[in-house]
Image 1 (cartoon, rainbow, N blue to C red):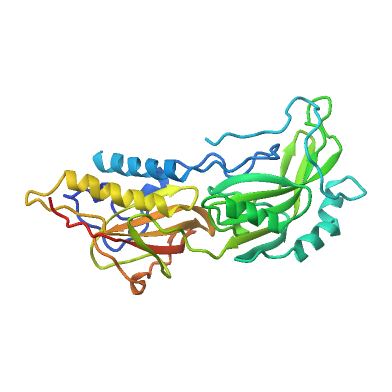
Image 2 (cartoon, rainbow, N blue to C red; image 1 turned 90 degrees about the vertical axis):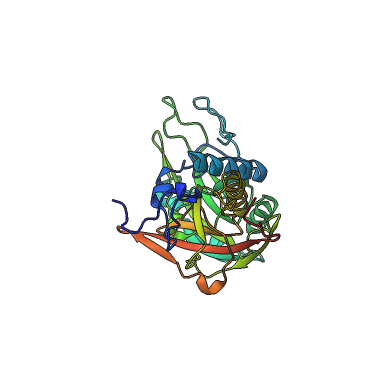
Length: 351
């Protein structure tokens, strides 16, 4: 059921359409967006380097915006042959090889509880029995030790990584198959990288079954960066806001991109909107130039979903950032990491 206050679809960016206000979330656009198929590491993966390409993503965002106006990551898997030896497994393990003993193993809980929080990050959760699963998944690494600093360094080295999740996982020593449905276990220490903050609500992967073998998780910690998004070429900013902008005028539309939080996609959408409108001016030669955009991370029930962009013909200050979220039925869509960017050299808005 659609909310009664949903704004018009992105066709509202076209010059002849009315400018919707206030700037409520466009659930039609959210529903129609292609959701990432990979929301966490595959169960048998031990390595999945980050492959997010900012330039390609921004080019795609610009093309997607233009298309709206005018009308998979590669997985590096483990050894999958039946009953083949599985890689890694360097973590500690309890003396008794059962799920119950793994979950109760005090070494996991003590290690997670006492792990250092890296500088520039805040700990989002500690010692959970589940790992993060969300649209903003970026990559996976397996360690020999439970090392939050090493995981932080990998996140810092990956463009647009803003959080990480580190945890112990009970994995099979052999690839479960008919001849070995429940092999002995070992412990992997996994570090996953995310293009958004991580939350307790997003830690929903409590494990799974591989034939008769039960994969479970312990000592799961999440850490989120304190940094703002990157500067964008041709724009002044970012300017930090409280919520999303809800301006009295000048709103010309929105774009939503599921997956990694990327202000560059909004910058590309803003530029593409101006380029399109300048090619389709009004009879007097004027057009709506995107001079300012508001970017924020959209979350559903505190689980990160993607990047939401509000586009405007003039810039607005923090006093107008009053939209902190909306209910849709029993689901709450919240705003976080909200920032504004103003076009440095303002477009005249006429040909």
